[in-house]
Structure formats: C-alpha cells, structure tokens
Image 1: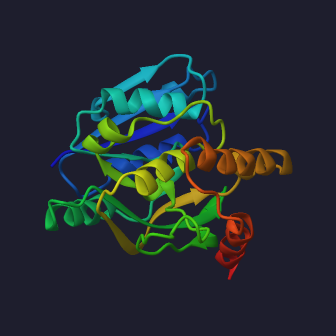
Image 2: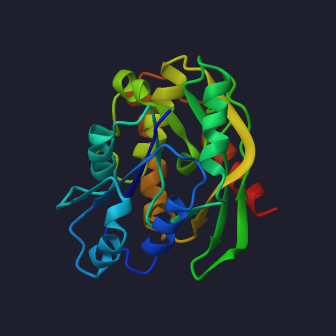
Length: 248
C-alpha cells in the first residue's frame, strides 16, 4: 500500500530540510514523496535538490496559495493513501507512517485516519507549547467545536475523487471546509489514533495575527452555509473552549 506524502513549500529554506529528513527517515517502505514549491527564491530549491534522488517528484511553479499547491499535489499523487506534511512541520517519530498504514490495513473499509498534534517552538522542536488532542468522530463532532488536526489526516485517494479537492476560494480555512464535506456530507469510516503524529511549528498563517483569526473564523462560518449545513449557534464558543484547553 503506497502512501503519498505531499509537502507544499514557498521560501521555506529555514525549515524544509528538517521536513524532508523527517519523511525520508520513516521506517515505512512504500512512500511516494512529492514536493510542490511555489517558485521559491530563498534557497529552498537548493535544499530540495540535495535530496532530489530520494524525492519522487518536485514541481516548482507559481501558484495561487497553499491550497492551490495542495490540489496540484493531489492531482499528481499515485499513492493509495494521501497525506500532507507542510514545509515547517515534522513527524513525531520515524514510525508514524507505519502506524497509519497499519490502521488502513486492519480494516479495508477505513477511508480516513487522523491523530493528535503537538505545537512546538519555531526554533526548538523539542519544546511542546500546546497539544491538540482529538477524539473519535461522532455525529455532532463538528457541531461541538471539534475538528481533526488536518496535518495528521490521511485519506484514501478515492476520498478525493468523491469529495473533491480544496476550495481555493477559502484562503485560510479550506482545510476546515474540506473536512466538513468529508465528515458531515459523506459517511466515510474513519479511525482516530490517540497518539501525537506531527510536530507543527507555532506561527502559521491562520493564527499569525488578529485579522487572520477573524477572517479564518468567517470562512469557517461560511463553510457551513455554503454546504447547506445547519450552523450551530454555539459553534464559535465551543471552538474557543476547545482551543483554550489545548494549553492545559
């Protein structure tokens, strides 16, 4: 069972080498590694080229943002399973993909697997500042303010053929909107792994300033109505609560 890992990068010279090494050090044998670069100008491509012999495909061209680049990766991916590891993230350990693959192999009717995520300092991947601990999916999962950590989410390629790709009209919350479609509108069987799978550096675009937080939340609210889903009145208070307990 081949797993396609897609890394989206743009001017990521400070962090991408750690990301690449994290993928290449995985003990799972059947990996297709794709890097989709947005025509970086800071030396990112020089770092990528150091490992080009071990990378399945590198595409470097201008894009319309991270979700457009992710869609490009999905289109060229040939794996049975597709997952993402962004250019400033790393896997929690060398066995993450083996653990994920095992869940798909145990039950052939599993279409989605996700786990937990640790937020770490920009300059020290050993310093965990927040823990995003999820739980198994249930009917009111999203209504109660939950959402799977997207960097830990792996789905069969068939899922993207049925659900579609990321909606690039959403600049900050296209991953949320995609998962809303995936879980709320389609009845795919999923498995939650109660383990941290990814280390994510603090300081991402969604939360880097108040303006982006407001814009991201507006996109989240819009994603419910755009998908003809009844918007829970308590969604935002519950989302705030879920975020606060990550610090505990």
